[in-house]
Image (cartoon, rainbow, N blue to C red):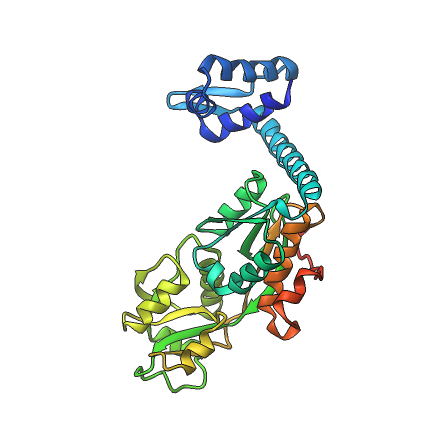
Length: 317
């Protein structure tokens, strides 16, 4: 049994096909099959089951796959950290998040990071849900994931950075626009622009609505918070969205929108998810802390965080 055998086995489980992995590795299907057979000889059990449309792991194969994924990701992370410790600022930070996160939560941190670590590379990978972000972390494809913080996830640590209150985005000429706040009863009477169905923020919001007994009227669903706000400005409907950084200044600058507080809804907790905080490279930790500083402007200058290791409190170990 070799490390390459385990890597190929995990790839086959993910692809569901020996031939697809062979194409990716530029080798023959027979060579891929030999990796799996070596593992089966070493373990004494069948690891893959052939199906009409490919292969799936057996129950024994699922046990090995879970252990192999954890081991491979952990070793890859350790090797990256050793390499970056040797290279200093010449390494990279791989981040996964939603489509609008960088603009709202990371823009100043990106500038500060580039200033203090000019030799480093920031790589961003867009995902559509927290679940996809967790999968990318588990596979070792990224170092950091910006997510809606929720319940425990096996092998993942979540650390909240900021609590976002909910607001109702309405046009300035809407009858609700001059209300100081919006109640649950108000929400039941408006047409909603819904957040993405598979998103954690949508799940959080739907749970809150159910507890308040709110039944929504909606014929519009969007891909992200920004699109919901845009459509609200066009008069398509009303959007319940988190209070994002910069919304207040946009409203003061003459925006056609008003963002009205929704005190009945519990805030949305967002922040970082990682495999293990203590295993992060110095560069990844520096970027995570810079983002934390940007989300807490009262705590000081964003650039100053490059030298300060602000340890965010873990909520899930």
